[in-house]
Length: 231
Image (cartoon, rainbow, N blue to C red; front, top):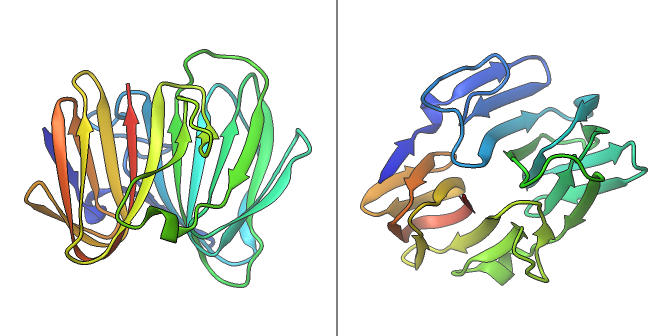
């Protein structure tokens, strides 16, 4: 089963520096039909104005994955980590038993990103942070594992039986994926448009997939895809 979630139907929040769209219930936005997908609990689509961002705040017991679509985000945390993640690249913070961090757009241009939260397999443990570049040329017409709990050497580690994948498609190219029975998938277009099992997805639309589904994706125009496979 595939349920399309149009960008225009997502939950929203806006102030003077942040324009956010929520694929699942988050903060003030509550929809009992959209409480997450398996262990995936949050998928936020954020636009952050230049030289602004999220001041220091705390998290615990969550795997937080940030996929930057445009611009860059600067991370700093109570563990002493500081790093700048650019467009197309990914950072992961395992909040563990608790961590304070800030996320700041230190650029002179708008930053857009996806932020995903996945529940860990076990609560507690030491927090951690890491970031990695994922050149789009390396995932042209193919899936690349960006973050995973399965130990792939080229992926950032998360503490759950889940994977975050990325791909780019040119118009006319095709890509497939099988979501196994008992698992959940969630797919969002970062850019472009595709046909997913006969349904058209445009930039920033989402698709919630129940287990046992075979996905067939065809590029209608050059597209950038982010996908989560989780229990």
